[in-house]
Image (cartoon, rainbow, N blue to C red; front, side):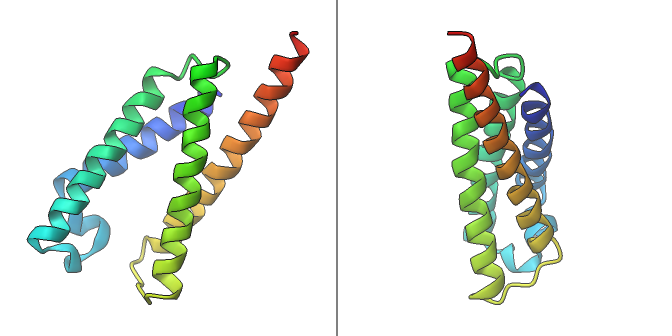
Length: 127
């Protein structure tokens, strides 16, 4: 789980800093309204917090807290995939990063689920 949490930390800190500093770089010029920029920056702060939590917990993957963090990441990644897919299909948004971001979050979902299943098998074999 160390590699999963380290990778998640790097991705989310990078995305969070990008959203905090230049939201239009991530979402395009459409986001350049006071409301859009504010919401994007709040999302950036949340991503930065997720990244920091993953970085600090990277050695704790087998603990209940580490597994809880990864469980939360499953929810986060599934919801992000759903929101991005909806934005691309139903809303017709076509940002160049939309589908790659959805794919990355789908892969991260699978990695998180796989890690939780392996962790559960490991922890039950120790009993």
